[in-house]
Length: 89
Image 1 (tube, helix red, strand yellow):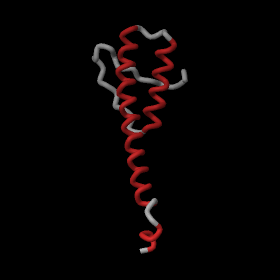
Image 2 (cartoon, helix red, strand yellow):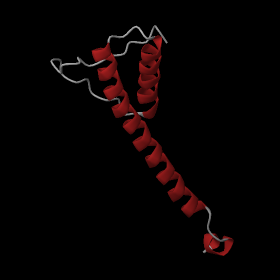
Image 3 (cartoon, helix red, strand yellow):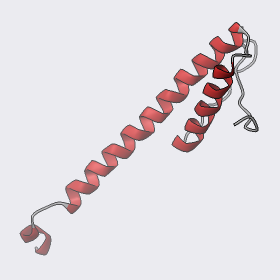
Image 4 (tube, one colour):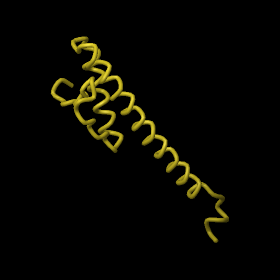
C-alpha cells in the first residue's frame, strides 16, 4: 500500500479539498491506503485528524454506491422473479 498516493487535506484547511472519487473501487482503495497510513503511527496529530475526516467522506461514498447497487439488484430481482404465467404474456 505504500506505493499508493493518498492526498491528505491540509489540517488547517488552507489547501482546497481534493474531489472525492465517484466510484466504489477508487474510494475503497483510497480509504484502505489512509487506514494503513494511520495505523503506521507516523502521522502527526493534525494530519491524522484530516485523514480521519477524509476517511469519513470516503466511507460515505462507499455506502452510497453500495446502497445504489443494492437498489439496482432489487429492481432486477423484481423484473426477473415474477410468476411464470406473467412472463409468457
